[in-house]
Image (tube, rainbow, N blue to C red; front, side):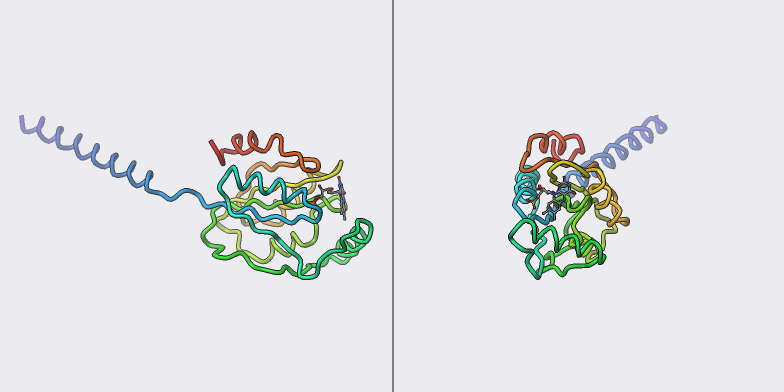
Length: 185
Ligand SMILES: Cc1cc2nc3c(=O)[nH]c(=O)nc-3n(C[C@H](O)[C@H](O)[C@H](O)COP(=O)(O)O)c2cc1C
């Protein structure tokens, strides 16, 4: 009889423990998402906005202190010079409360076969330990994978989820990608 009572007590205690664990898991706050992007012509911004609206993430525009030329050709020349100089163009503003974010999307256009140099400035400005980085990019025709890989390379302290690249403003595929990487259900 005594043994039965002790066994019953042990089972009840295990139950209580499991319940407490489930409750604390449920109470864990949802992951906070930042969607940081650089966009010169608006394509990457469009994709970033779609990601933010699907995930509830906070948008952060990576804006250069010194604006790039608004004409295409002069912009390509400045971008090329920055790449050749391994430049770190200054960014206008900082992310507020960086520590609150668990997941950071980083997006940019492909510029000269890779990420624009301002993405290096951004990546070097924050501590990515404990963050999950999700790269994305827009491009005209080529160097999507190299650009996504570059964003991963620039954030070595972070964990990484599979990135996404699209041509122009095309947001088809954004939702299914976010499901595949389990950021949305
Ligand atoms: C300076 C510069 C360099 C570019 N280099 C490439 C490139 O190497 N490969 C490519 O497919 N598209 C290239 N593009 C096209 C852009 O990646 C593409 O238009 C992108 O969607 C623009 O994004 P945004 O509107 O957010 O700036 C380049 C555009 C610029 C302005």
